Each structure stands twice: as structure tokens, then as C-alpha cells.
Image (tube, rainbow, N blue to C red; front, side, top):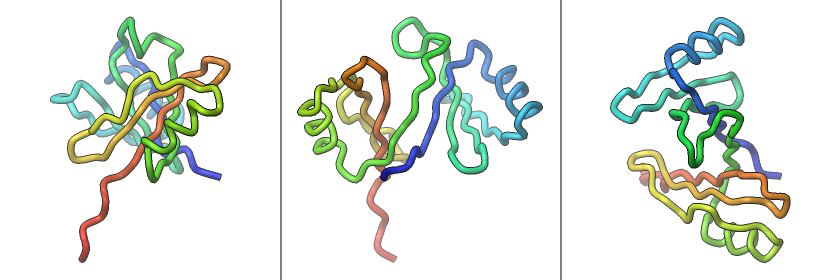
Length: 120
């Protein structure tokens, strides 16, 4: 099966949330203030703290990202299995691509695809 590759936990105050998770679980954080985002490493799966908003990142809306080699094909299969695309394939400049979908129950999850590796 495919792995979880990223988890997002909405934060009203990223630095206060980062301190909580560092003090509690020992997670290391990198604050990317220009993106209003903080990345963390939990040991096996990393993640981030997006700002709380009223649309996608309400408190409690933890978003789990699943590894994808072909986001468009995965979204077609998700829809054929009763899920719905919430956000189509979208580039994260310098990091890769993601898309958000709901399963047939209505749970929101995301797909993540890394950029192709340059030939060395």
C-alpha cells in the first residue's frame, strides 16, 4: 500500500503550536514565514502547520497526504470509486504537486507527488 507522506495540522499561532508539539513530542520545526507555514519532522512522517481559515483549515481539519506517482490518474480512480475532487492538481513551486479529494464518506485527504528527479 501507499504511504502517508505529509500531515497538516491547522494552527491559530504557528509558533505557539510548534512549541507545544516540540515540548510534547520532540518534533523539529522550520518556520517559513514568507509562506505563513511551518514544516515539522515527526520521525517517520513530516508535516506542516497551515494557518487556520474558514474554508480548508478549520480547527480539527487535519489533512493527511498520500504518496502519488500520477495525481490525475489517481483523481480519476477516486471519482470512479465514489470520491470527489476538491482541489485539482496544483503546483507547490520547488516541492511538487498536490490535490485534495473527499472519500465516499466525505473525509478530506490529499495526494502529493514529488517533482521528477534530475538525472545525475
